Image (cartoon, rainbow, N blue to C red; front, top):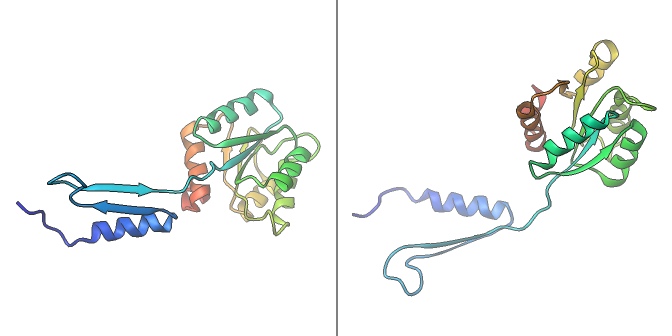
Length: 174
């Protein structure tokens, strides 16, 4: 019996693969066979996104780094706001996970410096803090649509927020 359909699946697959910089090759039937179809999809290798994890508590820094790297992300770490800003400027991470209460330069100052620099302003930030976020801090986070997760955080919620940040979806701005 002959399969039925409108033939859009192959066209859509080809478009999706090509939009990702790849190629799709189809042979039906494959060489040396009487029946069947051979499909070869080639996609370019890309580096995993880099996440800068910033927290002055070594245990929190280690746990966050482990959770993030366990999902395949490359991880940079910083234990204070000044080091965080230096790394943001030099290494341009794809995402910053940021504590608000940091020695030297507070997390909100890091956010303000990033958002005032045209080269850094589009790097997504997710705040993870044990501090009570109110007043001016809340206004800064709200004004820049930066989500805040409480300590202790849920790993699944953290990963959802990270995925939303990379995809630019509403999961990021909830």
